[in-house]
Image (tube, rainbow over all chains, first blue to last red):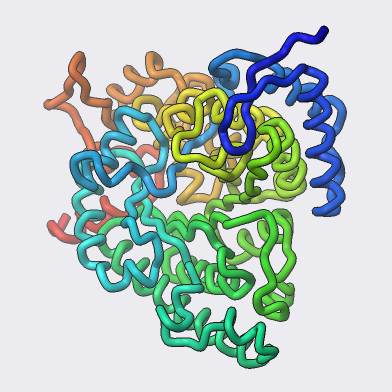
Length: 344
Length: 108
């Protein structure tokens, strides 16, 4: 009888599986990803490597000495440890991350706009106190611009009524306002000394959300040649809420990470963050095989650093408030060793 | 979760040279291998040293680019924080926004 190994499900719960069951899950994960994303399956060597990482009861795992990658940290800190500045210092000095990020709890450029002077003041103080690069981050969050929260007709209400043209027009107008808001916030934070601007969870509201991030990125790059600009995605696949919108002649709806990266690096970003969401009903082994298969084509064409999203429900880190170190460290090692990522 | 990532595969930030490699990624869009080689070349050390807090303690002191202040080791007479970033900017030959703003605002 095969020995059982303690491992995790995508919701973080502890389960016991045999080595053969973990191997089956790895194969099923890569096969499904290859079929859905129309990309090659992982090679046998890569699957064997993943099996060595995941078929282990060790409480923790890690890369070899010398193979470490840059750890950026969107939404650095908890907001409940002392002050905003102390939170950033804790992450620099105790946790040891490589890039920290100033942010506010309402993590949206539209929300930050009304509070931007206070955020900029914290940026100025953080720059005096920290040696690490300090970037500013928020979500493009296009949905905030639709009624009743925003000024534009709600496309999620228009679409079921068959008012397709109205829904598309509303998203286009909202995206134009969002570009302005991202630029407005970025200008204030750069003036205060920010090392970078992060557009996190991009595409959460679909293709026009991604469009706004790309346009804002291009404008910021033209204005600030040395600024760090990171675009991190919300999911593996750009949802076609509009369906027809294009950037540089490429239709955004339905793009997978490789095509997303091509546009992001052309827009002038410094760092791209691909994202693959976690299926909570499957094992972390299944999820990591799926995520690596989807992101792998991206790594083959990357001209800029790729920082894979690996936290709380993405990148094979379980969807829960307190991801266990065993599952988190396995995801770290898997992405760093198999994909040769530049950071996460 | 961030702690697990930092220990599993992170470079170590300011206690090693992770902050410097990150700056080359952000400012010059360098991929990891190129960024590590660039920083190691500027510091005169190996790329493996960049993630080693023992090797980097001396290297950082020698270049005045800031060491972590902790109970067992404080550095009140050495460059730290914004001061260290002046030296990092010169060492890596990159502009650092906060340093440039500082210089402009005090008339340097």
